[in-house]
Image (cartoon, rainbow, N blue to C red):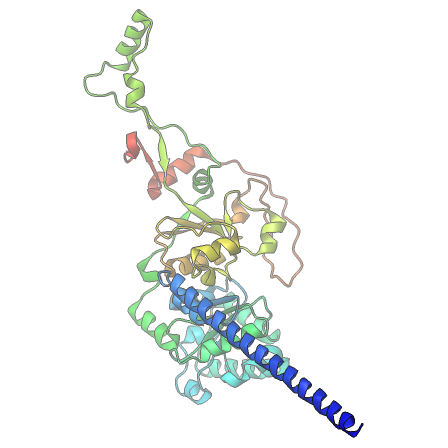
Length: 425
């Protein structure tokens, strides 16, 4: 009896210890398996984006769904034109930042914050107000200023409390010491899905400014709605002039007379004119408005859709991931890319981002969707994602002009005419 009383609990304890040991070993093995799978996935991602401009930087950052790398020129546009809600954090050590002020165009828009304080400044109104006020005072002392509406928008953002998840949160380091990437990971973990770092940090920005570079020398052009409608297959173009007759062929009047006399027509003219017509260059069109704008006010038929704040990271995705996320093929970088927003602000920012990603010819739609006035696309006033959407404006539709489209397409070199696509005169 005593042996049973002593042995029972001992056996139970031994069984329990064995079970706990097995459970611990399984959890350890599962943790190792997941770590190995994550490492393999990361290696696969790095390999798949090796040839994509910006892909290596995006793969190196595990900060969030929309981790991005901005060029110096894209940052300059983002600060100066306010194309979308954004906040810029200067993460350099505070003593170093005080000794080496930011360039004026950045200083007036930046909030200086020590890396350990990023989480509190992003979420606590008091911490945000203190950091924003100190940065504004330092910028004013340094004589930094933003022009007009951009300055007013920056002041309103500072007074309005910490950024929201709708903001593009940009982190600036001295060079690339890792502070910006770590801060981007912190912000992403807190729900900020649109985070970015600046390529090369402040050193890279200054080097690009000194070299006068922007977009790798790619200039942004514009395209009108008539021409874009033709490129998207929405507008037939006027027929080109008839091709010249082949050498030795009778004049059109003589050929017609012969046909009347014989009762049959010569097929040589049709053969000579085979393929005669306007050949339009392949162009992709990308709507960079937000999802709510496109859904509420309509979209230009034939356009792809990637919001402007997602575009820097989207263009770094491998083609398969782009297709999975955006349900379309990634536009080819070698072909012209038309970009459209409500008016043009976000489209010009997106054009710079596209140029940075290797697109050879970005084109901005003049007047944006506000001036489209066709295909049921409605005009509307600007509003932020946290504001109530405005009522559509009652503007009459405007017809598309094939002749205007043709003139511009020929001027842009996007249309050719003749047998086998010979250049139009």
